[in-house]
Structure formats: C-alpha cells, structure tokens
Image (cartoon, rainbow over all chains, first blue to last red; front, side):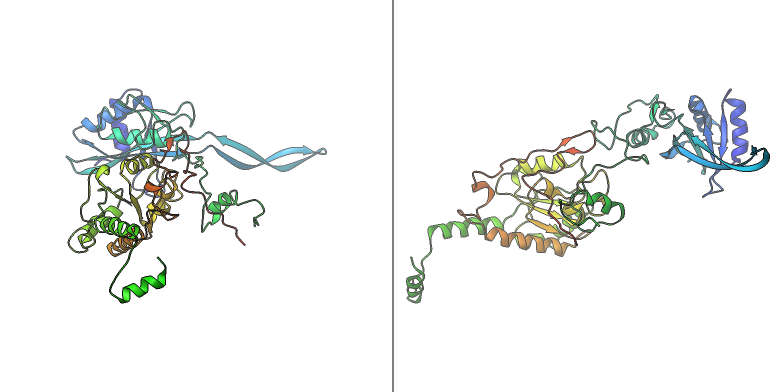
Length: 212
Length: 207
C-alpha cells in the first residue's frame, strides 16, 4: 500500500477543496491517521473505497474520542521596566483551547488485503456544533457504530439514515462516554469502598457516623 | 393434642398429625420436587445454567429439568447474568407474569450486586433491588455445583413454608405485594433506582 502522504496527495488532486492533515500517533508511530474536514469526508471515503489501487471496502471499526477543553500554562520571559530599570520578568500565559470530539474510522481492504487507513473527523466543539458527516452511505456497516457514537458521545452524524440511541434508552439525556460525565449517585450500599467510590459512598453514611 | 399423649400413642403404633401438617407436607414436597425454571438467561452465567441442566450435572435429579419458555408456566426465575438498567423493567415484568408461588435465584456476581460492572453507569447493582430474591449465589460465573447447591437450598426453604403464621408465603399473605412496580426510564437513571418495598440500603456504620 502507498504511504499516507502519497494517498493524501492523490486525494487532494481528486477531491477539490479538501482539507487534509496527517495526525501522528505516539502509541503507534506506524499508523498515522488522516484528519478530514466533515464537509469533504464523504467524498474522501468514496475515493478510498472506489480507487482501484486502494479499494478500502471494509470499515472495521468506528469509534469516538473525547478531548476536553484544555488550559495550558506557558512561562514567557518578558522584558519590563521595573522601577526605572529594565529587567527580565517571568509571566505565565494561560491558553485555553476548546475541546472537540472525534470519530475515528479504521478502513481495510478485503479485496487487496491491506490496511488500515485511519480516517478521523473532528467537530468544532463539544456542545452545539458536535456535527460530523455520516459515512454510512459509503460503508453500510458503520450504521450501528455511528449510532453508538451518537448515543455515548453525542456526535450528530448528518446524512445518517436512522440516527437514534442504540444502547441507552430513548429518554436518556446524558452521553456516558464523555470524560466529564457524572454517573448517577447509586453508591448507597458499598461494602468495600475505596478511592473515589469511598468519597461518593460517604455522602450516604447515616448522620453521626464517623466520616474519616 | 399435647406432646405427651402424642408420644404415648406413637409407642402403640398410632401416629397423629394435624391436617395442616399433611397439607403442608403435600404442597411443599410436590412443589420442591418439581420446580419449573424460566428459560431465561442474560449473560455468561446462563451458559453455566445450561450446563447444569445437561447430562453432566443433570438438574433432572432434583426435578427441575423442565425449563419453560413462558413465564406463565414457570415458578422459578434464575437471574443468570448481568442485569443492565435497560433490561431491569423487562426482568421485573417477567417476574410479575409468573404465577404464585414463585421463587428467584440470583446467580452470579452481576445478578447479586452488579459484579465487575458495579461502578458502571448502565448496570443494576443487584436484581434484589426490585424483586425479592430467595437464594443468592456468588461466583463469576458460579460453577454448576453452586447452582445445584442453590437449588437444594431453595428446596429446603420451600420445605419450611407453612400455610399460616408469620412464615407463610407471599401468595397466602393478603397484605403482600402481588405485583412489583416496574422501574421507569429516566433522564439520568432508572426511576426509582430501587423499590423501597423490597430493598433498603443496609445501614453500615464504620469505624
């Protein structure tokens, strides 16, 4: 199979206006992934499936990833006038990067027995613009997995034929696989609590019981 | 009849019993020797339950080999496996559809407490929060011998049933719950999280 750089270059000639970015993977340096903008994702997936050299006919796995809002602190040395004398003063800059959600597709070729090509889509934020393009029209097998991502991460897949919750019940409001999800408080009976379970179990201890 | 006269008579070969004792003996021994379990499994514990019913462990020795596919013909529910919160109302509904007298065995760590999934958002921390459980079996999954032991424990318990008094079973108690309310699907959890009539969190006072 070609390298991801070669595939990226070929996609850019075939799909006009596409924004592609190669994202490296620290855990698997041999498996970088291709970040694609949602409005071109369908075209890219169609190319990967139909191109005679690639023939990525099988979406083996579709999953979601949650990235929280990040606040990074950076120390910068700034030259300032302090009491009439120029001095170097350290200042901390706080940078906040908004979080986002991702859908990751692992594509393989059954016909040519190669792969994977890892395709990622990234949402704008985690709240009102958590929208991505559904690849179910290209890969029929992605239907249930995209529904699962919608159920557990709250990503809305536009173009999905039947987008509704698949594991949790319809009335459920939360997205349990998000990192900031707080599970319901049913810690009233914990015979052997420890760590954060102990913290939550303590709130249910009868009044007057020692808390430490 | 007082005990002295009774033992005196029995020395002469005359045995006396109360009508109630005959009835209880008849009811209890016919019930305990022909328990029809509901054919119903939720997870891997069900595989052990199936193994128990097959030739090697042979549940038929205890008269319980007739697994019924309908709750209306069953009198024992073996909750074999993880009860998810989404499945909980269906389990309670199946139990409601079984005719009295009916019994419940909670089989395995998941059914008795949530097991390895206890801290999950989606698993019920024990089916005894919604229906009365007669026998709990620990294990993940319990061996077929453990299920056989639970059967024998249940049989011994059925043997203790009386027609009157504090020990009388649920179906003879006018004040007992006939139907167990189904939990509803809420926005964050099932509502209520447990049935207060059946289960209350044990008060644990710690050092």
